[in-house]
Length: 142
Image (tube, rainbow, N blue to C red; front, side):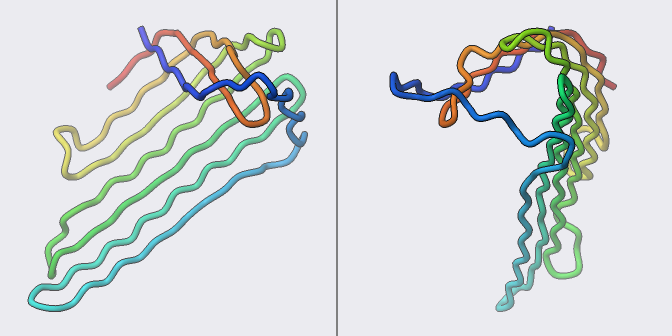
């Protein structure tokens, strides 16, 4: 059983969230680079990308992140994660979802992990400033 909950405080004066833009990708991203020199040298690169697309009753959310680091000439970190979830709106508060996730980490107990999930979600709060969504479902992880 898979359960995820996003919690945020609620205020009595919150207005309903405005409808998202339709039929176009929206998102945000960030990237970083660090280079250090001294008694030892090190460098790292990281990045995160979050994209969403709303098509009437469908929502697609894509999350990708990566981290790569070296200490001297030795690789010290390498992690890549890609997660995609598709939601289908049943009512204004309920939805069905399906998701895929892939994680590759050279320095974890598992070199790679992949999973597929499906289930239902409920929006407890969905205002412009606060959101609380719970999801429950089942999945397979390798």
